[in-house]
Length: 110
Image (cartoon, rainbow, N blue to C red):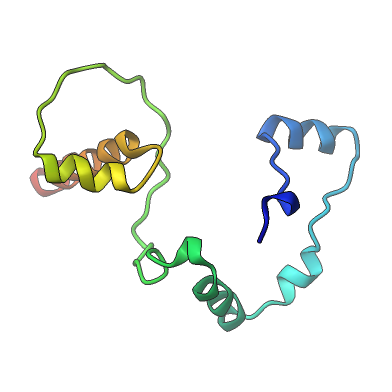
C-alpha cells in the first residue's frame, strides 16, 4: 500500500465532520460482512501485524496518558537497543511494560 492512498485525520476532525453531517467514507456494510476468518487472513497478510497477530489480547487494557516525570535511569544496553529497534515511541512502550509489572505486583498483593 502506498502512502498516497492513506488519509490521516485527527479525532477532532472526525468529530467536526460528524457534527457537520459529513458521512463516513468507510464501507461499513463491507466491513460488517467480513467473517472472522477473512479478517484474520487479512491481518496475516498485513506486514504491520506480523509480530502482533498471535498475541493474546484478551487481557489488554486501555491505558490513558498520565502526567510523566522526567528522570535519569540506567538500563542495560540490550534492553535499550531492543526497545529503540521497535521504532518511535519506544519510551512509551518501556513505560507500558513497567506499568504492567506494577499492576501485576499490586494484583498479587491484593
